Length: 279
Image (cartoon, rainbow, N blue to C red; front, top):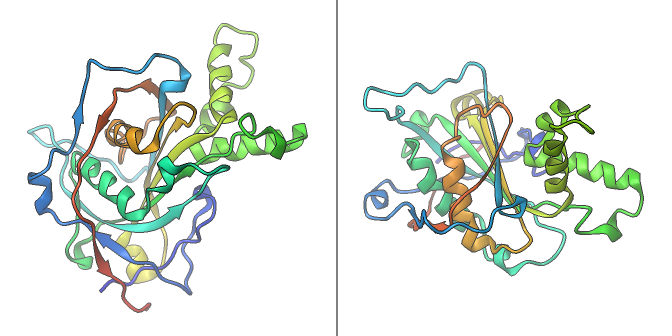
């Protein structure tokens, strides 16, 4: 059984572990990866182009964490356990995302992590990362205008969404571009965060440091999202995760926004490592 400390389920940008509580670490068996089709994509079938079809990815990694490819082009294997970050919810009821609890989300994410040689651990002593998983729907003021009747409230929500979805750095970098040829990018960014978006956030912490010293060190994080309008979370989520997976553990140095194909991922059962009493 494993001792790890619960992360306050608040805004994913501001998560910190609490010394007084604990969270389970979850394990996915290695065996089923060889038996399943981890991803199947129709590369000839794309949705209509436009910002409504864009998956946006923002990935950051600690300066002291660099993944170097081996001679065969693959990354070295690194182990992890999942942490239940939580369902962030959404502004309105949506059955396509309500059907996804932690187990369903973890099943999908595990397969995409495996494509980058992140594998589930069987032994807490050799576990490299605790990967906290968050998902939900952002509240866009443009999609929910009644909740944001003043410009101040509207702008405050845009700031929250920019941080949550990983748009903050690009928006800061685009200040002053209004009225210039590059101004279209800033408009597109604001258009994205003004409307509701499905999102997932993975935050990989140093497991050993957290377990043994109760200290949290964020090693890497990946945030990815897709506009809610016209989409079904259950259908789009595997495509989103597959596309974002190539940025796991990497630095995108800004937001990556690209139309991606439809697809599906078939993943097996999730099992729990259990919980140990705190130190």
